[in-house]
Image 1 (cartoon, one colour):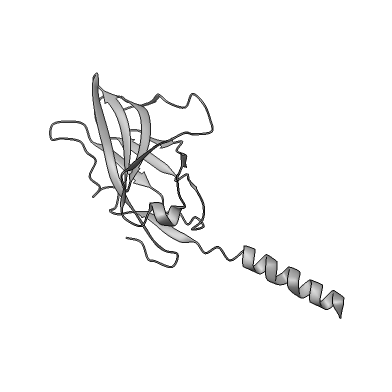
Image 2 (tube, rainbow, N blue to C red; image 1 turned 90 degrees about the vertical axis):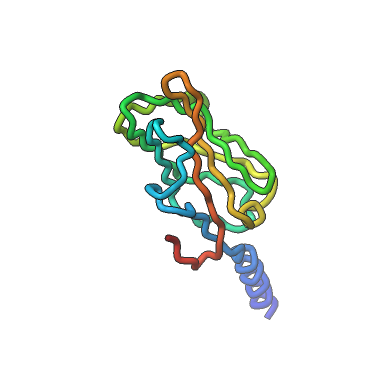
Length: 158
């Protein structure tokens, strides 16, 4: 009888620990509708953030981000940051020396992005957040940006 109680207690503890529900974090608009932060007459830089499903208690956010340079000149990505509820988080990828990253005209590149958050992702993404990619084009500093939204795990994304 004691063995059955122990097994039951252990099984409940394992199930309780594994019940940290997930959430969905997605780009508010499709990449082609996204506000790129580029003014008229400048190059076209598009960001695409893949939908992710982290556990709500996680304090890291490492989305897959792709940048497309549709201009006629190369750009150099210098940094990536996340703005959420008045806090700014600078990407600190585990691979040192990833930035600056040069993106040739007409090319799409994956960005290595890792944010260490002050709070859990469900609190960080209670309101829409903004992902900003800083880059240099023709010796001018620019920012490409897109909005990220958090929602329930079973939410359909646009």
